[in-house]
Image 1 (cartoon, helix red, strand yellow):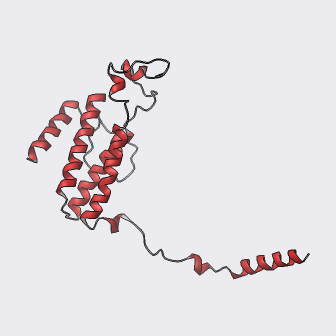
Image 2 (cartoon, rainbow, N blue to C red; image 1 turned 30 degrees about the vertical axis):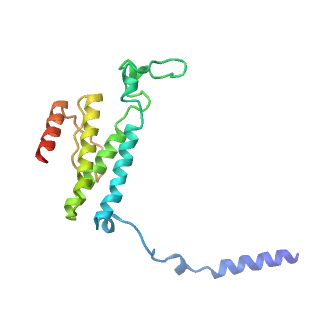
Amino acid sequence: MKNYIYLIALLLFVGLSSCEEQLDITPVSDITSAGFWNSEEDVEAFALSIYNSYRAITNTTAYSERRADLVVSGSQADGLGDEHYHTLSQTANGQNWKNSYTALHNCNLLFQKVAEFELDAPKIKADAYLIRALIYFNLVKTFGDVPLVLEPTLEPTTEPLERTSATAIMDLRLKLILSRQ
């Protein structure tokens, strides 16, 4: 009985002593887009997300070895026939552009923020241009005509992007490379 009295007293104490103002405190620090792009170190930190998202694309055999004569479906490699026989469809496992366009968004956002804040990061920008060109090269090689996106996607949209011809993408890639020399 004595334990019940202590338990009730504890619950009343905790319930009556809680304060709303203790829950309404301003965080000591927070990372937002407004406070992030201030230095070349910030650009370097964001560049890591580009490398990471590019690795998500290249850390697979779905768009390379599986589509060549190097791999054949069998008991240990079941389900590789779609890629090997070039019968890709919307239902084929893992066949989407999400990772590619996530990496492209990161590259485009880096270019926008570096220009907006007038930051000096030539090596990082060069790496991002190279990664963006490689992504488009692989997309064109694998899918042919694909949407060309050269600005970051900052607002959600329900409208599908139109495909740009593979030739136009490769010509643009070549023009961008030659303009930087």
